Image (cartoon, rainbow, N blue to C red; front, top):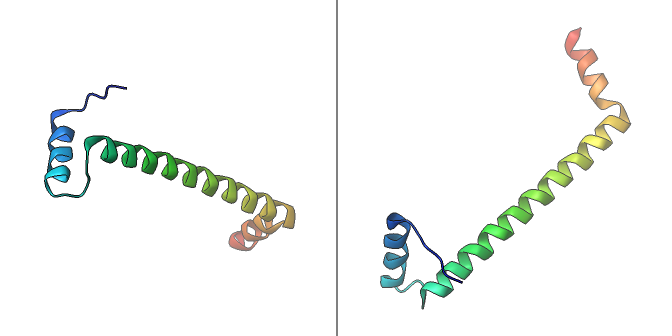
Length: 72
């Protein structure tokens, strides 16, 4: 797989390599992709959890209670 990065990202990759934070460009890019995918998965789990919470709030009738008391 070939990857083409912008000049800014290329400079940042080179800086990370020069600082000794990674052994190779491949290692850095692999870790970056892994981080991106993990973040996306975490975000999806949060959305699913919020939906479950919302469903429980709806089933318990809490949403209507909050609306009713705020209108009084």
